[in-house]
Length: 159
Image (tube, rainbow, N blue to C red):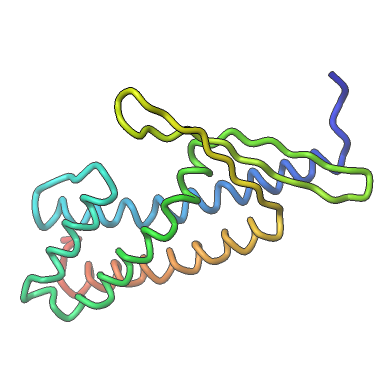
């Protein structure tokens, strides 16, 4: 096997950095959903759909009604990032380049349909699309974290 070209190394390095940004941003929100449920329900929902249900249920409580719309929005938006998060966290990555400087990033994952059945999936992308995805989820994550911080302060959940 020959040594990768410098161009390929640079693409892999940036792709790895962007992958980390996407996973980290998602994980921050994922943690706060669980933390809110643990603090208020003494319950740790493991699956993301259950964390979202728990937080939406909290938002229906009278003392959290002021945050209801924002909490629902944060929960609903997170689901929109679930697929990219799964590819970033669990996918095998390959990068192909050509001599003109063009590149293609391919991510492959398996999903389970049931205990006996699996399906392989592919996602093709490039650095500009990954940059945009990372910027988008980081901006979302920052908004969500600011909401959780406000709730924690106003409801005195850190004391």
